[in-house]
Image (cartoon, rainbow, N blue to C red; front, side):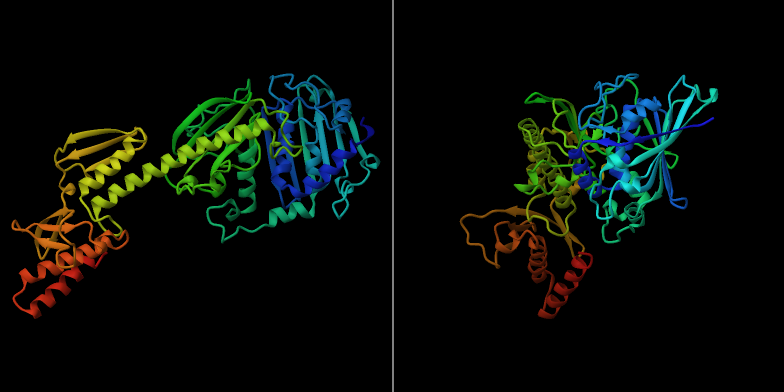
Length: 521
């Protein structure tokens, strides 16, 4: 036979004031994060989130230690202070919650909040209903929550003796919850999570903050594995969730102590822009839970790093900032210790933003110079290669020079970013400075005269050996955007005289060669 009971939510007025502010400002994913965090603190090994918009409900079920009727009363008492020991009783996890306000965060998103729970080795289970619609007025202002009556009933059965769980059900979703799910994918927000449908966006946001494992394929999995006795799996719509992570090359990892704060970090790059946009920068985690959005710690305010958006990674706070977290747990308080940590992380990011930019620019410049085409520097390919190799060597790259074997090497230079190695294939034909005009291949010599005044008449000339001499200091050739184009036009014009016997032939020669040379330019 069921036994009825009543309870009240007991909460400090200061906490109510704060909650009435940030629960309406925060999104639905934040509220779900709080509920799942409670499951983690209850030593759950599995939590399942099921959303059924047709039935107007959201159910979060975990296999944690559960609650007795008396523990549920304590669950409803929000005192604005740490609750019990900082480690969980069964697995010794570091607790995520510190104020005990987790379940309150979900109230604005439903009209009724139903909680069912039982503990192991107990024949007693209970179900309670919290009239969430009474908690906040329509204008968002808080009311006297002590007047809200929570009703429930206790049942006893030997069949539940081996069970232990807590199930929280959001029934009759509120208008603000429905607005969240009705958000349409933004077609003008490419490469941002706003471009995802609501449920996919919710999944992504949960994966960003919940205490999840990295995917098995992630290179960060073994570097940033959180030290805990037993973890927790989270399922969303029956699919297991994994932490958001970028595929790429890990370029830096380390353990640091800054002003007494111990942390571990890893930086990864895919050597291209990180997508989606929200994955750029470093995610800070405390007790394995994400704190706020990813950051670049102020380095975007100084020099503009062109490859900063190629960097992603995480920072795990191991100790020292547990007490410097805001009530909403989405930011750190600006303590001197946190400011010192931020400054240190900013300097690390600055170093690697410069590194990625230098390496990519050097590799791209060599490829561009060797292949030719638009916006290449007028000069020797060898000089361009040597210049960029020096830039790579300055960033820790080794150089390997090998004899070319056969025709297997597509390019004369290969940059291996992972091994930090540059391979140069000697005697590669693509390293030669040549040009083919009118079916004849000519060698190009790049010179830099100091005695002779450079004019349009001698900027490009043919020497006694039939080689083309190009003055690299001629103003038109120094144009970063059009220098190579001007060089080709001058070469055609200089060769036209020797290839023509009349002004008409010269005219046709110039136009025909320009057409061939720049048809695909």
